[in-house]
Image (tube, rainbow, N blue to C red; front, top):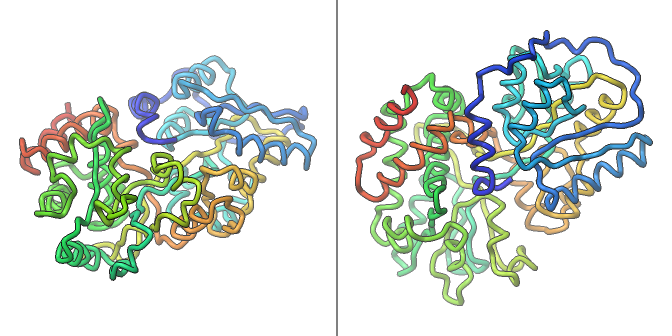
Length: 433
């Protein structure tokens, strides 16, 4: 799911995280596996148009096992899954767009631990490092990742290296590259954050990327869970690091004020001008759907991409990835569900989905030659090479913060209305209040 599409869904999901679901009260014990009836019902937040590849993968499972699987997309997944669980009408499996609600339903005892159903240790060994942490609660596992997206990507014009620029592998090299580009009379970054009522999430993504690199995944987790206050000096420093990029003269197309009014979907387009209007654009893999049609028809022939570097001096050693994903969680323990969860857990799951486009495997062992577009195979390799994965932090924070004050206060900071400290203080106050 694209962040700009799921604001309402995520906001509802996050608002209930940690609240517990009335009427659940299960024991988080999978119990004994019963004999299946040859059919499985799945509820998820993946829209019908994006579920073509998922359905193709499920059809392959049906041909292999004879078990019929019905996937139902929900336009209000958070509300619907809670209603069904409360009414003892939960689907056999649900596909969660973020792990927050998995934890919520696990607290109330409604989800099934997978440890007694499938080989969780093997699953953990094949997934992108850090990805399984989001569905591990009290040393038990409650979800199988079936799709991920990668936000930590930097897009460049096709002739980037021919122009004399070297792909950076550390944060310091990225900062030096900015200077090299400016010295050649060109603009390093295209950046746009305008998204109507959702304006601000582009900036929060940047701050999350910086915190992850500057302080590492454990500190990042503590911050997202509010074990570290939002106005901690290290978070203020991360916001100021974003400011150093946006406010640096000639560094960002249109300057800081321009980023507030530039629609995020339009912001990468200068990459494709005959004389590129910028040399870099940081955005998730979904941004390709906003590229010109001729570019989309041949991504690998029209654009380059590299992973946003890690190895920030004094920070996390390695390359972390910020992203999102969908998790399959079981509510029924029968032989049919066990077979499908095992199928989801296979490293080669999703070959049919890869051919339909718009999908990335969460497995480090997936054969990337199966992606229909070579560019997605390249992105998948960058994802597989990452040292750790973390979910988008604002999507995991309470709604009034992650989709509220974090967005609005970053807008105020970029617009020069507030200092980094003042913005962080306001966000912290909203979290406490």
